[in-house]
Image 1 (spheres, rainbow, N blue to C red):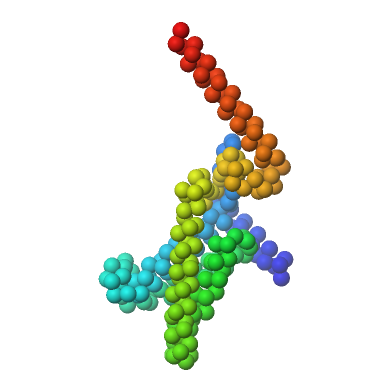
Image 2 (image 1 turned 90 degrees about the horizontal axis):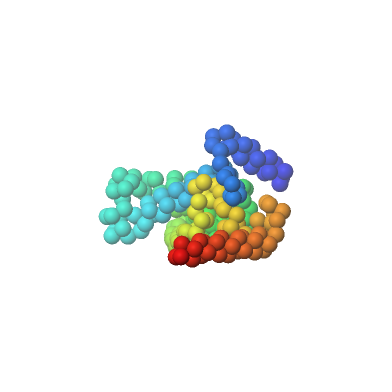
Length: 222
């Protein structure tokens, strides 16, 4: 089973590489190839569309402001389950690609499972008991709030908390300094170098460059 999944994932990676490529400049490392970045943005777009269309149906106040984005209330109601379905499909591919262990990743897994189960029960509410549908609405909303909280934290960590992380999902690359600072174990795996030694070498180089600048400034004063 795992071999079949690996072969499938490798095939998808190769197809994505034919569509686009990643340029790695000097002093950079490849963090995320085209396929990983593509899946990341498809999952993000599907989630945002699901979130906005879901909020549009959540309350009369949000209905007024958000439904025009989708062409009105009936269209928002029609599109919301499809957005959710696309989110789960894209995330399934991402799950096969990453099999990650981060808390945020597994919160998406849990929320995604709850979304698809409760969403189907709500979508086909004419074939299940009403009490199951009512419970599904509650669970669906709680899963959405869990996902939203994780989404906000994810954006913060990918921008303000760790500058340089966002470029990994746009250009696909990160600087070596970013790698040995935030992911030293990964840096060691992909480069075969000791992150601590490279950090110390960079620190000494910065000190030397600063010393040279100060000397030149002092020479210019006389």
